Amino acid sequence: MPTNLDGLDIIQGDALAELRRLPEGCAHCCVTSPPYWNLRDYGVDGQIGLEPTPDAYVSTIADVFREMRRVLAKAGTLWLNLGDSYSAGTDDAVSNRRDRKRCCVPRLHGKNSGLPPKNLMGMPWRVAFALQADGWTLRRDIIWHKPNAMPETVKDRPTCAHEYLFLFSKSRRYYYDGEAIKTAKSPNAHNGYQPDRANARTVWSIPTRPYAEAHFATFPEDLVAPCILAGCPPGGTVIDPFMGAGTTPLVALKTGRGAIGIEINPEYIELARKRLEPILTQPDCVNALSTKI
Image: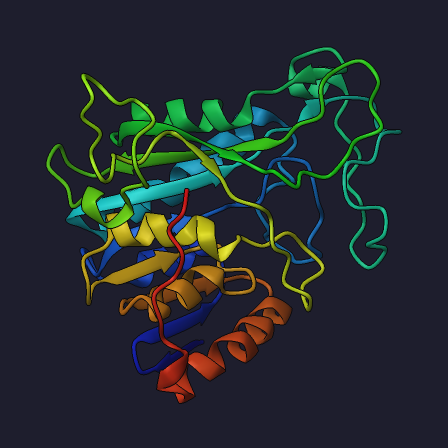
């Protein structure tokens, strides 16, 4: 059931099913991070991420974003964050071991993933290519560099300190406000001339900032803000079909946009409502966010 508040719609349900109920062209921008493949069991029937094979996961994600393309306005953009996973034996747990409430998902055997154990699956790019083949225009891959990345005990490869953020457009011509996310002075001065501000680069160094009440990873607001400022016109509507604790709607409201959030887990719906209530009841909470990237 949707919760309709001023500038905000919260919908509990399956992402694909609920997107099918939304009218065509009702949102201007999508900023989202679907569950990653084979990394965590969120304890809800119908959840995405526990498909038996990478191909099944990619197909499911493509179905969701095919419907998202219909929901977006012609000039709409999709900002999609995805992390990667490994093919490994079932004795390897891949989730935060301190979180006993949600079971850690054993990594699939190589025979299920199509690769022997210890292979990096390349899931972000598998999804990106599938969406590209399905009609989206892949405009840019962005590296989200995590300066405070979690340490890893692995001894035979570097510790991961990044994830991918993909910018897709629905049409060849789309809304993009590069001025809104320009960075400080460019380090590439030429002939003594250095512009005051330069185009945003493709590596964004943004620390993770967990939400204390959530036992799962959440978007940092500073990662979502430049996506919304560049991808959604003021007064437009931002949608997140995997809302989680509500970071995307939170940033949308703070920056003067409306928001639609879809989430399958009722516990996360309540987290989001609690988090968003101050923004809806206290106008002074609405303020410009940092766009330092």
